[in-house]
Image (tube, rainbow, N blue to C red):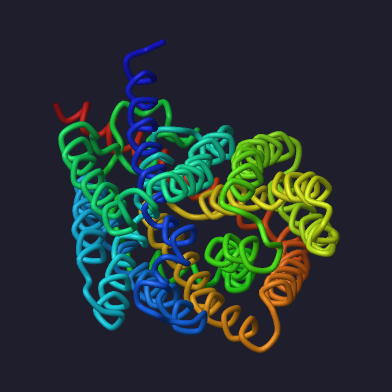
Length: 436
């Protein structure tokens, strides 16, 4: 294995650790919902506002992070994001009242929108043929981070309290900032694209306003933006409310929750990689492959979740089996959506494109925890989870179907742009050699 190949896997490992611990910190609030509600004496609606506050801050800062990543060094900005993560988590831990907690928790959303640069930098280390698998493997960190948070919350909250847990995760963020700053090197934008792979040197490409505005003329990208608006509703509802649903409506003890969620999250984690791998497999056979995999997966997820949520409370075994089967399919779309965004956008605006995708996703879905809380107060968490998740996934499947029809044209356009860029680079290099 060449030194370059080994180094790209080192970068991947650092980013995996970043996402694993960051997701643990971000999602830890789900398992800690009940003790936090008890500390501040608040109901589901007020706790839903806490969730929504951080999601709104994150959503509105996505375009800012996207522009910065496409304009400046991505590795250094990721180190800054890690510093912000550690600092804002500490502020949440010391908050003395509900009002200060909701503000400090909202501030944690600043770094939650920092992922586009991470994915963009990895795209310059790994080519399009394997990006689905790489992103799927990277996204294992999200459910594993949730599981890590779940275990920490279950085992430690009664011993050291929820505030002390936040102190620990915040400190880890500060330590990772040092590793990223000194250990991760920037890569030339477009370095891994097949059309540019044989060039000794690649020109420096940075954010271009004209190119960025051109993103809104790509029909398949606009459809991905549209499905993103509703596609994250289920994730936010499940992430922030499912733990409490098991506690209060299925009457699970802490041990029963742990025994149910740990294997389920492990299966869900595998779903990211399996979904990315299947997407790569079909992408090599048809440019529609990734999107078709996403379309089928969300529809299957909606059907399976309906059966799962309607399993009788007394039948914990069947509920657990159905939950694990459902968990395998629901992450399939994620690595394929990211890969598709990069399949149709130029390297210098990829952070911006993914940031817009995430902005639209979170701007809509930021209301999901609050909406679920309001439905739960008037009905039940069972109804809130089922209504929001199933309706969102059905809409997503329809939008993916239309995207699959349109995406080949946008992929062909990008490949032609990269071929023209490679020709220009070769001509410029030949001219430089001749002049010398």
